[in-house]
Every structure is written in C-alpha cells, then in structure tokens.
Length: 193
Image 1: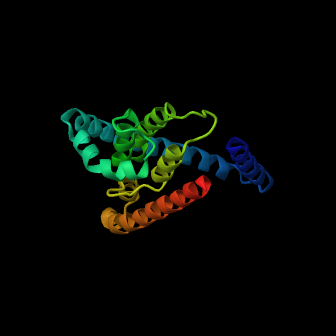
Image 2 (image 1 turned 90 degrees about the vertical axis):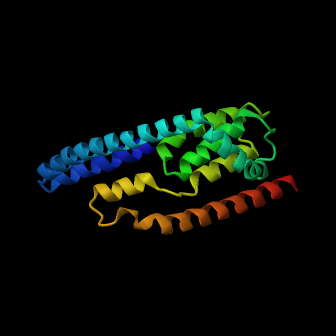
Image 3 (image 1 turned 30 degrees about the vertical axis):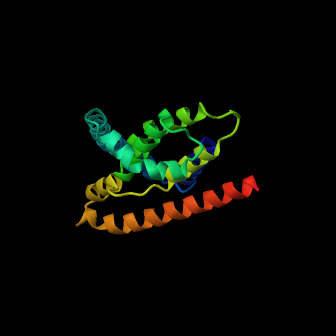
C-alpha cells in the first residue's frame, strides 16, 4: 500500500513539473534530497552502531542483568503471563532500556528478539498475545530519557541548543506511555469479561 502511495506522489510531482514546464526543479529536488537522505542515513547508522556497542558492553559487563533486576518488578506487572526467567524478559528489558536512551533504531533488534521469544509462549500463532500487544504499545510510546536521534537531527540542522527538548520529551513520552499502558490494561480486562 505504502509503495502505491509513494508512486502516486512521485508520479503526480513529475506530471505537475512536466505540465508547468518546471521539470528541472523536480530533478533538482530529487538529486538534492537523495543526497540528504544518504547523509542522514549514514549519520543514523553511526548512532545505531554506537548504541549497539554500548548495549553489548552493558550486556557483557552485567549492567543489563542489574537493570533487568531493577526493572523486574515492573516487567512482572506489565507482563504477568511471561514466566519468571523466560528469555523474553531479558529481550524486553534490553529493548525498553535501549528505547529509554533514545536508541530507537538499535532497539529494533531487541524488539524483534523479544517478539520471537514471546511467540514461543503463544498458543495461537496467528494472533498476538496480551504480552505482545503490551510490548508493542510500550515500544511505540516508549519513555525517552535521552532522545538521541532527535538531538542528532536538531544538532545537524543547526539548533542553538539541541538538548533543550530533553525535559519536554521526557514528560511527553512518560505521559504517552502511562496512558498507553492504562488503555491496554483496560482493553485486556474487558476482553477477559
């Protein structure tokens, strides 16, 4: 579907440029923005590699295990159907921590692993479990202690103080996560009734 939408937008732009005899501008925009997209992607890849390295160091040093123990009571409340000591708990914890430190792209690998681990507990493989739904909601609305990707974009675009959004970002993402969890729990309780 998304490919059709993109094709329609590009086709419309080219046709508009052709009709208005401004095809040179369309061509210029395509070349310039393609260049910017590659630059942006390489920049993000750098951040992603950095955070993957940090997360691996944290895992090897035992920090992840410690943080997992700290977060364990919260994880148990949010995901009561996952048995204690199941590998999904570790994957979920790593994903949440990576998201909290703004490594959203790096967190994707942990998120996929968490979903695979949770799917081993799924009796009905054609639909998501409550734990999977809760994980997805938390992942999408995750609390951002340090929104690194946004900070990088702001710094790259010349913001005078790229870090001045940390406070508002923390408040906004905390509220969105709390609301998302409450709504998900309400829906899950209603489903049981």
